Image (tube, rainbow, N blue to C red):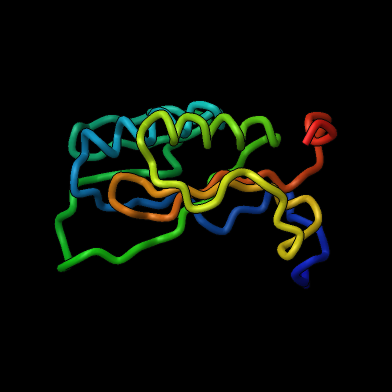
Length: 143
C-alpha cells in the first residue's frame, strides 16, 4: 500500500471513470472550464447544451450540468492532472484571467510527497479546483 510521502503514484490505474458536477450558471462554468482545462490538454469532447463533457481524448471524464437537485451549496474538491509544472502555472494564470478566487498559488506541497506541485482556485460555483503535477520536470529547476 502506498503511504503518504512515498512519492509513488500509480500508473495507468483509474478509480473514477468520470465525474459530473452541477452548476448554478452553465455559461460561466463552461467558460471557466474551457479556459483552465486547455493548458492541461483538456477540451470539450461532448456538448449537449444541458451537459458538457471535458476530456483529454474523445472520452468525457469531467462533466458539468445545470443544478437540478439539492438545496444550497456543498463544496467539492476537484484535482486535474497536469503533465508538468508549467501546465500547473498556465492553469493558474488562466483561472486568474477568468476572475477565479485564489486559494493557493502554484507551489510544492512536500507534506503530500516531494514532487507534489499544485495550484488551487475557486470555480464560479465556489468549488475548490486544483491542477497538480506529481513529477519533477525540467522546468522545476527554475522555481
